[in-house]
Length: 96
Image (tube, rainbow, N blue to C red; front, side, top):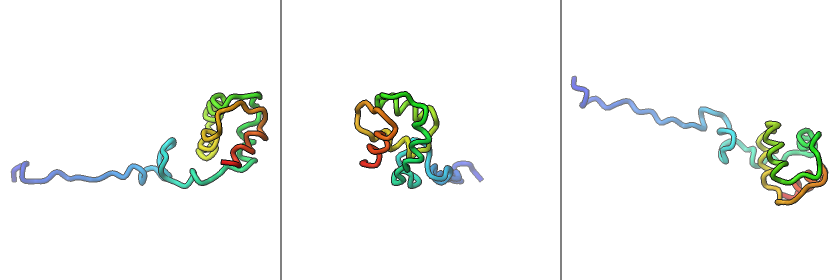
C-alpha cells in the first residue's frame, strides 16, 4: 500500500467541549454572562478596597483577586467614573 493512497486520519477538535463552559476570558461558553452577581458576591470581592477608586483600578483589583467570571464581566461593564463605596458599585451593577 502506498502512503499517498491512504488518507490521513483527521479529527476536528471542539475546544469548548474540552473545557466545560469555555475558556476564561472567552465570550462564549457557559451561561456566566447572564449570571448577575449578587450583592453578597460583589461584597466578597470589594471588601478591603480603598475608596474612592477608578473603574480601571477596580477592574485591576477584581482580576487580581481572581474573582469569578460573572463578577469580572459585570464590573468591566460599569461606566467610567470614580466609585466612592462598595454600595455604589453594587447599585451600578444592578442597573446593568
